[in-house]
Length: 340
Ligand code: SME
Image (cartoon, rainbow, N blue to C red; front, side, top):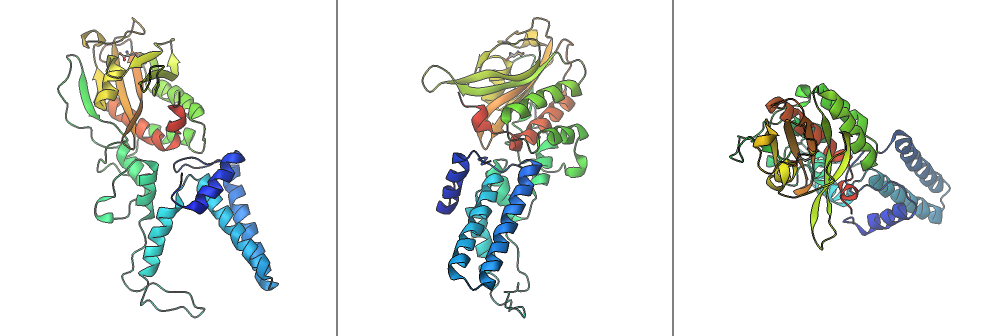
């Protein structure tokens, strides 16, 4: 559901004809991008043609078509255009006093500030539900990088044999960690999932990539928070993974996975035998790390890694895996992934 009635009409068209219409901002594939450029160019050319022919009906028709393909592009990119439009409008109204260009275009006055579109978009992605402090311009890319490179929080008290090393990656607005600091493995992971709208394909490739990116890992995969048969209940259900067959369902608050999700904290477990309630899917597993996945304040699942080597995971691995999760968040349709 979009904020504008017009975009909702175009969204209905996209859904009816199975055209891309992601809920949140995401990049479409290369062919779709080119198609959307062509559609706008074609309708703009029809508008120009109608104007030059002085055909009023054709002008109106071309304008409606132009609006339709423009809103269709917004749908294709998963952008709710109304808040962006409202910010652009507000900025345009602030051009008062800027004068006019020779051909009549309204000019920007001294000190005019452009709208903070990046911050509005970041909110739509769900990475930053709150407005950026001070309203300064922040690009989506650097926001994601900042999340990926953020410092984990102080260790919290918990069960013996466990260390909490930070909050959920999608939840923290950690400072620092600009694009230059980005772990190249995280950039590679993101290049694997960028542009692919299918959540299953993306989580499958992500599990395979992360599994292969660290030595001595015996299991790597996702558990997704999905509805249970019991009314209103939700539990973690096995998702895409690499390794031996694993436990299918984990209640929230149980095991390392359920505890990490309930607390919204990354848990590093150097010795699984010392973690009360550890669920032993593979008896050979000796250590474990779990990163919760929280999108726009909503827990949606966990990323879980096991190793047969004691104390295999430390703070460096936890931060790397948190960065992986943060970079995955905008490229996965979590609503679909968590549907029962
Ligand atoms: N050990 C986990 C269960 C999942 S498996 O490790 C794949 C836990 O205690 O939650």
